[in-house]
Image (cartoon, rainbow, N blue to C red; front, side, top):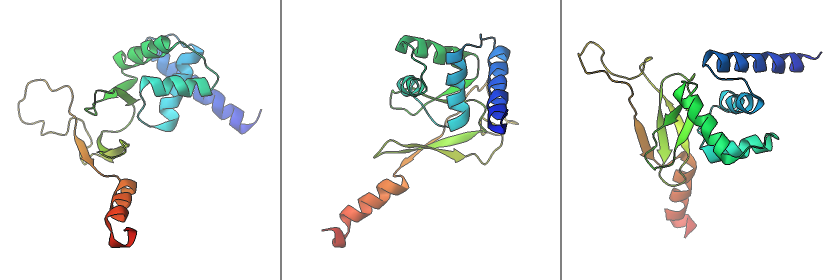
Length: 158
């Protein structure tokens, strides 16, 4: 057996163990869905996940993908990212605490490292009510859009 095949088998077993630990059955679609989150470390809508599964040969009704995403979220495998646009996107819950930058031109979402290791990023010595979540969103122009904006506004581009 090749190293790549062993590595894939080990990764699959790890994904199956994560599903089992979360109280979910380890089906092929769930393993593939969790694999997408763990491999790509991005921000995905349920529709994007549906397409990504289709590209991997896992054909499911859209409602099944929505149900699986909801199950993953409820059990802490993924978290919903509040980007404020009404479009729900999700990311792997195993990622370290971070914030998000959203380009107001192209909509790209980028992770911004958090200076504080634990989330939420507050002084825990202050006696607050129970804080369950904190979201910090930075908005502006990504590098590519900033370049395009500068190019279209410069005298050379006119």
